[in-house]
Length: 186
Image 1 (spheres, rainbow, N blue to C red):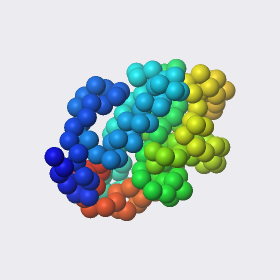
Image 2: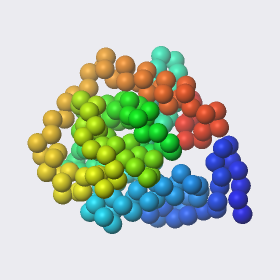
Image 3: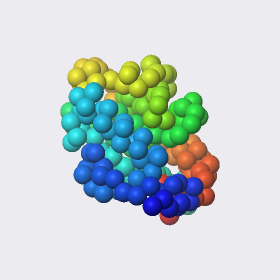
Image 4: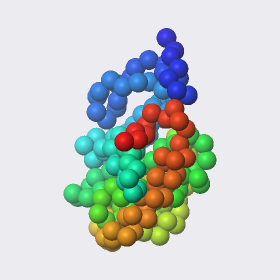
């Protein structure tokens, strides 16, 4: 049975590949599950390297919201990559994803991935420069371990965090569809 919730078509339920929990089956969630399988089955990540649906609190003055980060990749005790999924154009998702990479932890996450499930852009977090594109170019676990061994985990200053919060709030909260249930205004 199909149910419409906001602008999302609920197709039933499915079992999350990473957590094993039952979640709503939507077209977007099917892409997220495809990405999870790619990371584990083809890129060599362990399920416990991947944290799905991480909730990030974003505060700007007296406004607050929780934004979900599709996947946080943790290796060697650090967040080294985030993946942000969204349908449609990837270019419009670069800047808010970079802002996430500067807010999710007190240091700059080295690698940022924006994807629509069919394509992906891999971005160097510190510079915002796109370093590769395509789902095949997602770094494998071994490659990421090698890259983070020499990566700089630059600290994020309170001033920069405030600026990134404003950018993220504008893109993800103020610019969101009113029926988007992945964002929770507090």
